Image (tube, rainbow, N blue to C red; front, side, top):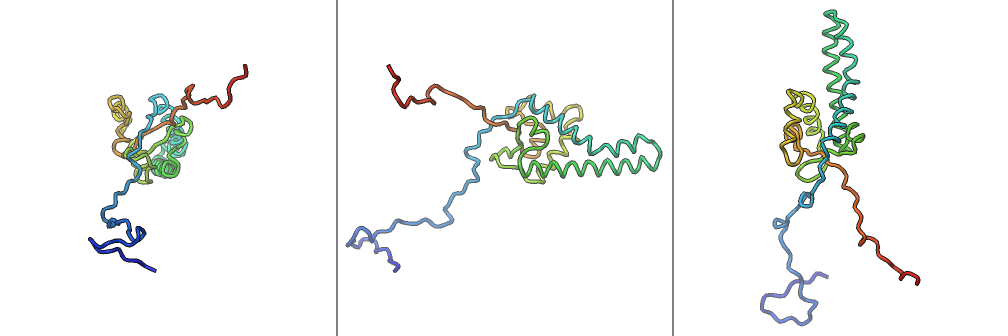
Length: 189
């Protein structure tokens, strides 16, 4: 049985006849959780460890292409260049899928860091993760340009982080206080 709200100014016979006013759906404010995002940024050392591990993984993907280029004949050099490009694309796909699903590449797992969206702390999408990876290995190493930028950024964001809208975080440190331990029974005297 649907009840209608009484008209303005009419007397109420029972307090249960009053209904709470509702807002139209257009006034609703939605948040994607970004308001409470306050990350602990990864240290330069842990980021360096993650970079070295990811670089070794990339080297494994590029190994066949490098060997073909080193052999030196014209057909093997051309095939090596194709293998290098295919290896880089494969490494980029593996990285972007890992970061988009867990926030961690192989290097991030070793360094115990996580790559997340700088605005809200959510995981990056595959496109942003792939862009970050490509810039990390193709642009940032040029004169160490991309990495030096992190020294002057309060969030420790490199060029590839700024371009992809990401930040590298670490787990919050565990803290302990004497107030955390409450005595439930009085000490025996």
